[in-house]
Length: 438
Ligand code: SAM
Ligand code: SF4
Ligand code: F3S
Image (cartoon, rainbow, N blue to C red; front, side, top):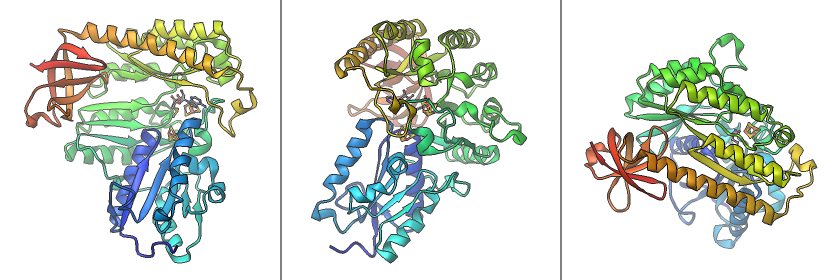
């Protein structure tokens, strides 16, 4: 069946993390600028784009399953493209696996989206553009954001940390900071557009500026510049513990816009495993930093990512992870079991922890985290929290997040959507605080 020659609509689906969400928003902006109309079902789309993730096996299998289904005759005349981390991990081999695929676009080639489409339309050939090391010409201002209240802002792309389990340094390339003037300009435009909250994004935001010594602007300096734009709330994602500095902790204490929440991913609580993961800190160093942060910002809430069942992790070593997770008392925790990734150093270690042991360890951490969460929410009852309302729940209540990233709901007028208001917490259901406006 012949492919579309004059596409008018596009459908895009995002898998993975916030970087992919932002990349999707930029691609939507590019395609709409080209005159294409976004649609929300695959049936209606002349072009179908899948912005993919490679972080764990399950993430890849979801996309491969989806694309297998798209091989059906019904979608054969559509132009189908893969972007994102799986495009970088699997490159042109995707064409062999999926003959109906038309293009593969790399994570640093977003600005080539138009040219890759033109190439496919003119030649009818499968086309890959994956070669750029860094996207110097990417127009971030094209991002077409879904929310009118909060926005992601990219400040640094790539990762130089090379944790042994992780594909990201291979799928996103080296760390390259975006110029601070461009970042500040984008935030100012968001403030003018009525946005109340931004999350500055990077795989390791606290490396900001280290690759551009002559700028003399490090992460905490950038946050200070952003604070001066008048944006009400600033969050950042994600951090590497090694690069969390005292300057950053003081910035959280001193800058009114900066929310008192730090994602401080421990990954594992045992020194041998941390070394094998190439996390470049010991548990002692990690805990010392946590203590310093809690001293400087007493009301800080911490988040973490944890991996259980890393190759050779013994029961005792897992107990260290459990104990240290309990000790730090995280407010947010993303918990994973180890998934071997092709091309990473950990692939050379034998994935020797049986699946049922991984699952048992995972469930222990989940239970621990559930208990910690209930404690934190109980402690908030009768307290007043500041909530940025983003919309309404299905039963008509205002919903939003506190500065510490807790979900909160309350009855109130439409005029509060997009505004920050104080809420007195009365109870909670699952992870959501329920309260009244004060
Ligand atoms: N740069 C961030 C960091 O270091 O926190 C985010 C990295 S990744 C997008 C999010 C999380 O996925 C990691 O923190 C890690 O816990 C988890 N992860 C990465 N590779 C993994 C793997 N091979 N198996 C299981 N979990 C993995
Ligand atoms: Fe992956 Fe480690 Fe980089 Fe995070 S810091 S993206 S876990 S290599
Ligand atoms: Fe996935 Fe790539 Fe993000 S691997 S988690 S989409 S950086």
